[in-house]
Image (cartoon, rainbow, N blue to C red):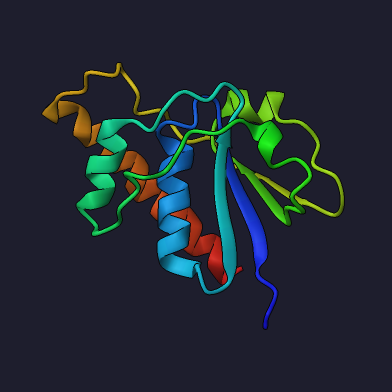
Length: 138
């Protein structure tokens, strides 16, 4: 059996950006990676993130919003922070870990998102799609 690299996407609330990134990476490369996401102050998965991922046929509705501490000693190979705050507060993961930072605009306005808020969530999803595809090429 081939060992898969472990990758984790981190943002503050683990509600939008990191959840979208986790769903995209699982969809695009679950054959190569064990994929996780976490937050420095986890909340819950944002309904609009679930909606925009469903538009691509990717279901993240059963994802959970988890604290970074759950993953510190899980042997991560790559840690990707997707927000500036998370980059500043992200703890050091032990071992040889590749650390990547992407400054992705937060689509979150509030928990009661409207249809017009989906525009920002789609922009975030599309930006993360491009970044992940570029990461997979490198």
